Length: 122
Image (tube, rainbow, N blue to C red; front, side, top):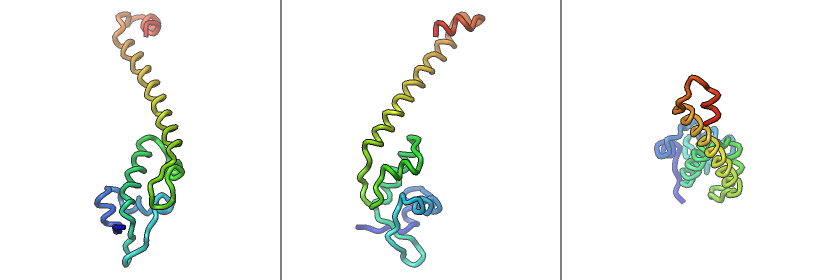
């Protein structure tokens, strides 16, 4: 097991130290201890941070991310919750694609002076 101090975690992950401390308060990250004044993390913290970032980009709250990840250093995930979120995102994408198609058809509609005719053809 390799330990990383907070400075190395910041450098390698790009996540600010203040955010690491906040994630620690929320229980998303665990500190192994301290060496002097510097927090020490398990090397797997980098993988956890990547998963947190992925969850946030998928629109999950930090609480939802925390519920999907175990508290220990490992990375066993609540795959059911992640798949449910992926399915919800897929439905949202399909809905947005339908809206995009309608907007493009309306923009290309030759009946620009009659919005009702364009809307009915969209």
